[in-house]
Length: 177
Image (cartoon, rainbow, N blue to C red):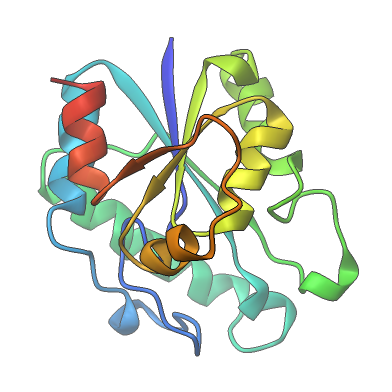
């Protein structure tokens, strides 16, 4: 099975330093929905792995997060794509849970649920913590330059073997030509 795991904010949709706190604030990045459709048509299963500390910090509740994800899922479907699963860490960073990226817990859970080896997964993110989680899990790290990606690239210290692409559509074109 071919499995690609996508970070949410900065990869699929616009990011905000103030968090995406409502469905109305969720706006897809240009071409991201079509990229997910292309991946699916190319035989890839697509999962999302996203840190959502806003829940742990009380900025929004689980019902709101579910509504945001419902909007995202509907937008992906309208573009001809499908998300196989959405995994999230609702904890604040200070809790130091195992599921919050850069720790690999969420990616290990995804690998278990899909019955794949982490080494067979591709993790696409825009921040160093996404890439570090991929490396720690044994997945292939891919950096996109959307969201925080350009700053992440400038900062350097990317895990060895990290592929770099302009955006999610560029990743989709490589994985599903």
